Image: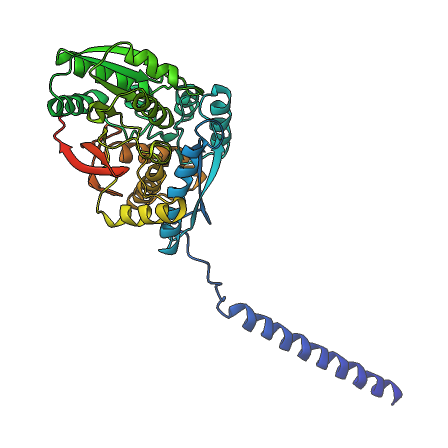
Length: 414
């Protein structure tokens, strides 16, 4: 009887064990047979999605040295463009800023160091360089395949590095020919001209050469006088010039020097300011401040219109007047403004991403786009770029009441 009870207990345990095993295996089968729930994956980025959180553009600028105010004006225009672009949503939805590097103006080592620092950023494009030693710095950018908006360097230098440069100054000769022709027409009878030239610059001697060519074509003799950047006493320049018994003067040098020589000439008896022609770099704030009271009747030629009624220019000029006391007139104040808007247009039209894997491809695309950018809506209105050179009109101005008046647009054939 006892053995029978023990047997019953054993059978009961075995029965419940088998039942539990069967039930457990059933649940596992049920679990295994249930369909798997797939996790939702984030959508893959589109091919043209922007890779960066912010666009950082290196700018090579004249921050120190004798022309530091050039760099200050450049940053002034850039700041307005940054303000406008970023408040309107940035470039392709991302904010943009400029990181500046100092090239000074007459220091090859500084220009090279600035370019080296800019290239270390592995940029898509560079704003600048624009100083006299662009020629020393640009080979590095060409080697790396980075397009540079070296816009005010001058076509003679920029052409050496095309297609990797963009130049805002057009061919000098077509412009100087029409400018000198018109000035001589307005002042008949001139036979001999003294030409003040800053030969230390990389740009002004090329402009002066073209101006002389135009005057020689008209049968006018020219005598050159070099005016260095660091000149302090300008009386001797006036004495030397008047000793030539000239019929007029052309100035292709630093605006500060232009104004001071004009003052010295006036003090020594020269009265016919109509027979003075200032070259395209003249119209900057120092001309008006230093030369005030002595510039009446002087002519100046340039390739942009400081009295333009374009709303963008009017806005910049008004801010300049509020800050510096005079309306904007110098080329450096709008250079960076237009550069940033050119970059914006290229990045948006080309759908630039900033993806490091596409760096070489996107650099080339930017280069090819900007070299032949047509109908660009610049600060003075629509303008074309052909083979990396801005196609500019030529303007002749007469100074009245210490500012620009009597604007004449001259037909220029390139």
